Image (cartoon, rainbow over all chains, first blue to last red; front, side, top):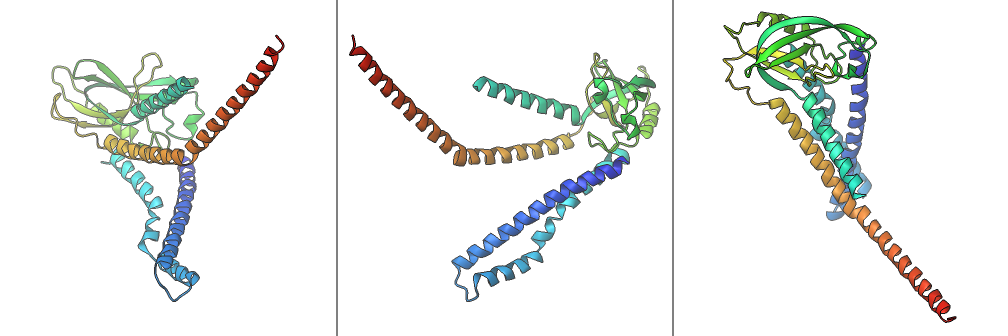
Length: 87
Length: 213
């Protein structure tokens, strides 16, 4: 069925975008933590500081917002379907 | 080289412009006159002007298509096809063709007692290729001079597209300034140095030849 093919392609494309975005965002978070450590005066070693920061990042809202990569297009499609066919 | 660059640039923007003009929704104020169905041959390249409402339709070489005939405010005729776009391109996700056909039949009015409707559609009417715009929705409006409303969809899509292109352009310029321009200058310097050296050598050979005179 066409619907399943479209869903499958959309899922693959969006997953690629999601993966790249989350890797990029995590790398940015790591860079930010490292420069923070270099600028500040911390007792703990760099490794530990970055690891603790990344644990916090993993629970942050910013990371969950990347799920919008799936949610926004899907909601947009639903909105268009409603507006075109039922409004 | 410059000529090729300009040609490519113009071809790109004209294609993008026509693609958007074909795909984005437009609105007409029309009086709906009649509806009909006609068998359409889909065997040649004009296939791209017809929708693919479902999977089996992509292998068919002919099928029945519904049409909606209208007359615009200026008296000119417009004919819309009425086809599902389904899950395929362009992404209107139109599945209510039969409902729209019913609405259109209900909206028929005469010239003596006109009722005006706003028809949202995409696509082009071309008499030579027998292409028709696809009607997306119809709704009654006050009269022939009523406002068509703001084209929200076009505004949003075009703004997003402009933002994307601007983003790509800015990054490309930055990349070019940082990576490509210095390399090109390096090449140019080397090329000119090589040219100077060759000229000097030729000058020496010439002087030696001249000494034989």
